[in-house]
Length: 161
Image (cartoon, rainbow, N blue to C red; front, top):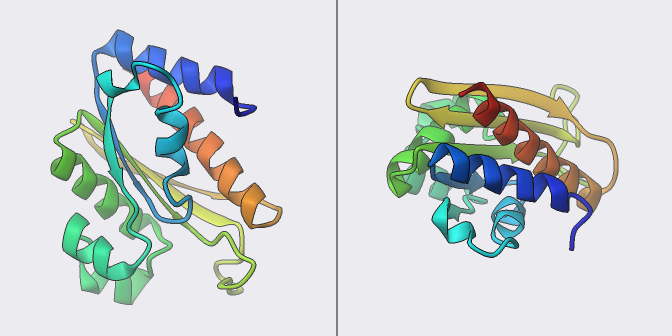
């Protein structure tokens, strides 16, 4: 199993103990977080599903990200991931949700948002919070570091409840 197996199990255990469900909207990780969550038997008790809104049309049509948000802030932004998280939470009717959007590279970066820039958002009944991280490495490393960080953020959120 993957190197962060303990973190995956911990995430599942916290979701089960909290009796909460989660859904994901993964742009730059392409479904990796959902893959990791579902690698544990019984994960269907807490993981409802996910959307891989790799294209901006999917972000707007499925998740409710506004054209204005994309035009003003871009797909890799606090504003976009917050709307993605709220959208997938409503779409899946989950208790909490996680959304992620970033630049995994090797292309697509800019001086303002270099390759390795990744935004995360978590939504629950109290609203939506977002954070920004920067990861070094190649495309694969950035994707795995992003997925691992997402699981850590979920665990931290659940431990606060």
